[in-house]
Length: 215
Image: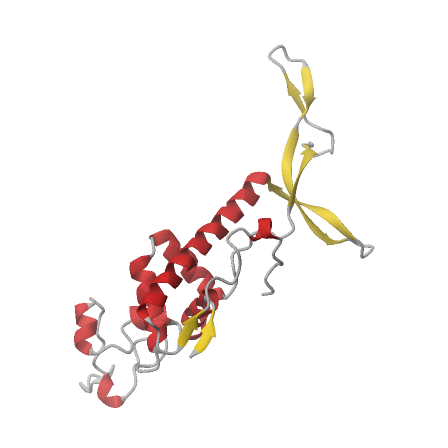
């Protein structure tokens, strides 16, 4: 048994095993299973000779992992994703499983108030109901620490609003919740070759001070 966290198990399932390509195209399934699943069966050679592809031992009309090569644990993970998660959760799990990268929660980001400026650099002003200046317009923007031209680390304005940071971290939280739910389902199933160790990061790593994951 190989110990693995659920995020890396999902990555193995979709980036290495490509389980969605295999199962959803019907590769690796018996003919009756494909028919029952509503998957088109390509059983004849293109030259019209009538030979069954299964008899030839190859497939010419499909892509993905060849028949019989999908690991049963990858099949179990994909089935659990399809049946135990919401559509949004499925999308997040598939997207980041295929890329192998966790959602970017913008490690080290801070929010600062900056002056809103015109194209010529002049500040924009707020006006009251009488048309009088009521102060300079301000916007809360996201800053990230980066190396400047002199090599010194400094806060760099990303141009993103504070709402963009909130959105990025909400997406991360939904992805984390999806994997946590998936892990619970898979532990109950009992995989043949993998032992799930749990979640690789806290749900809110920006609060826990967790380092950014190296991709």
